[in-house]
Length: 239
Image (tube, rainbow, N blue to C red; front, side, top):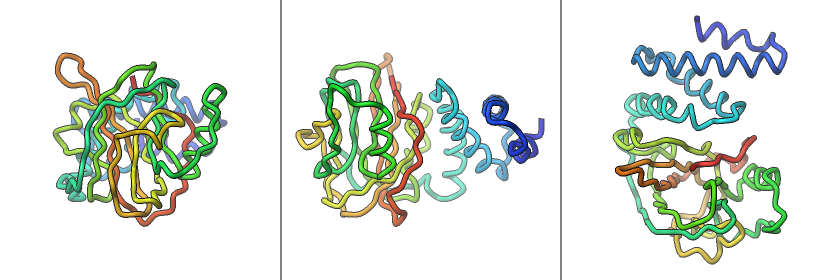
């Protein structure tokens, strides 16, 4: 299968066939990544296809491992494998809603906790106000909030081998100069926060699986000049 040719021919397919073809191409990419036969010229295309497959799949996390490995290859080409960590803070956050919220705590998202819908959260995300992701349940969760200097919110290359899932990258407005992580609707009360320069930030959350099945969330942020407008179609659940 010539993945590039198949991708270019997607426009002639009806939506249902198009979605199935995207998932078929993504499966082929996963196999190529496993055997390490991906050429440098295909990396951007393959990353794009896996991102598209994540949007149309009922289980987007299955693409995260291959996507991470491709990103590592790209990092070495762009120089972002040497991304500078500006600051970081770790701690436990208590989640009662099953949903983590990331963003500027001075924004009021106007969410009724007992009656919120995923589509409402997506609207807030696409307006650049918050990144939300599900945890699969309530409880206390280990989180690291990391601010870096790079073109994308990336991890170090060696960390990607621990990644078992991630959110899409979104751009958030941070006018107050504070990025906070906490429970849905309670962001202003969270103690896990980091001071940054006011502006827009690219943000991505990674789910780590370390020794003895200990899992934690790494939320990586990097400042950008791009506008805070997103096109998320589904809220990630990282569990």
